[in-house]
Structure formats: C-alpha cells, structure tokens
View (cartoon, rainbow, N blue to C red):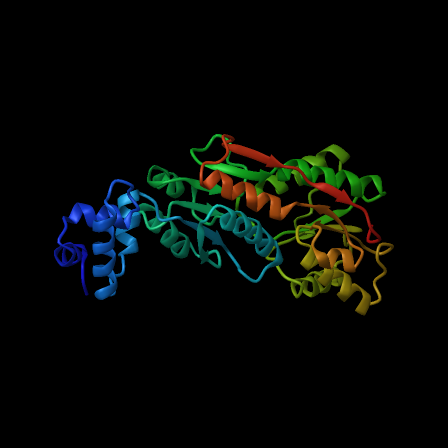
Length: 320
C-alpha cells in the first residue's frame, strides 16, 4: 500500500507538498496539486484516519456509558446525546456495562489512550476514587449530582424531586408510602433514600425496610413487587416508583389480581415515558432528551457550566 512518501516520489514533489494538498492548504500551485492528485488516483491511496486524528489531537468520537441499551430511560438519554452529536459532526462509541465495573473501566481506558475525546457516563458503577484517577486524561461528564467533584455533570436533584413526590402522595392522604428503585447503591439512590428517611421523620412515621423494593428496572419487575405486597400484613397504601416501566408493570398486575388503583394502592411513576401516558400513570416528567443534549455539549466544551440542574414536572393522572 502506497504511503505519503511514495505519492511524493511519483508526483515529483516534496512530502510537505503532498501533506499540504491532502489538507487543502491554499499555498500550493495548481500544477503541483494536479500532479499529487494524479499520483493519489494511480495508486489508490487512502489516508490513515487514525494518524490524521492523532496529528489534530482529536478523534471526534465521544464515549457514552449506559448500563442497558434496551431500557427506555437510557434510550431517550442516548437519543438526546446522539441528536446533538450529529449536529456537531461527532460520532458516539456506546458502552453497555450491565453495571459491571470492568466494562466501565474499558471506557475509561479508551479515554486514557486518546481513543475518544470525552466520556459521558449515564449511570456509574465505579467509585469516585477510580473516576478521579482518569479526569486528567480528558473530560468526564456524569448524569448525576457531582457538585464538589472534579468532573462536569448535568443532573436531577433526586432529593428535591423525591421529596416533592412524597409530599404530593402525603397530601393525597397517604401515610404508609413505599418506593421502588433500581440500584441500592449510587448517588441518585442515596439521595432518594435520604429524602425518604427525612420525609418519614417529618410526618412521624416509622421507617419500614420492607416498603423499599430494589432491583426494579423493567415492566416484568412490577409483578414481583405486587407478589410481595400481597404477602404483607401491613402493606403501603402508595408506591413511588422510579421507572414508568415498572409502574406500568405494577398497574397491570394489580388489575389481574383485582387490586383497585388508586383505592387499594396509589402508584406514582418517574420520567413520563409514553407508557405512562397510555396507562394514565401519574408521574414526574424528566426531560431526558434535553438532559442528553446538555451532557453532550458539556463533553465538547460548548457550555461554561460545570454542573447544570434539570428540573422535573408533575404530571397528574388517574393512579393516585
């Protein structure tokens, strides 16, 4: 395969002149340009894009870490990131981690080796000590409240949003409130639990550990939640569910078990995904596509804000 030196020899010009032609440099005569282009065509020369990126110090690739690619929450988040990437002539490298630390580490290593220009982590499994080891290699943007850390973030204040939802349910007459969540660990989960404990203290209700349902990610997990509720002697009268998919699963299973919604059990979801609209689920709307857009703009340095809060909106429907 011909290289730039071969092209220069065939065209009877210097390597510098070939480089200028390849990079559309203005100060090359028409005669030399034509000679270089003939030589390129004769030997079917292809530029080494990796070398070009290395010389420019950019790959125009942004890494995006998600735990799952088949979950609507992360699908909408990636849609917002991808839309903005297209507008700015960047491409995405998608990492699905399944919340496995070694997979997230692969993404961090690509940042270290300059294979990507920045890394957006939509949901983190690595500890802060590990993340902070890699901030010197390039921008790391998180979709969580990272104020006080050395990374940028666009985030929902889950303490405030959870408190808002709990107050809403309480004002509807509910005192025994439980909640469903994905992971037990993580900044967002910790903020939600703190909001829950503070709320219970405020209304003078005891903390019931069995009112918290972990590992709730998908529609099918709703059935497991209902099965547990049916075995309780003193079940909660309302559930705050951090995924509309799970809330829809709970609602469907309750109908199958003749559990009246909202009379026997009130349900409130999160995100305002299409399934919440179809099934009339009261929910807190998170503008996920807008959130994804802001994450991307932080990754390429088009915003001066290191940390930006996205606000949720209550969407009232028939399940509370």
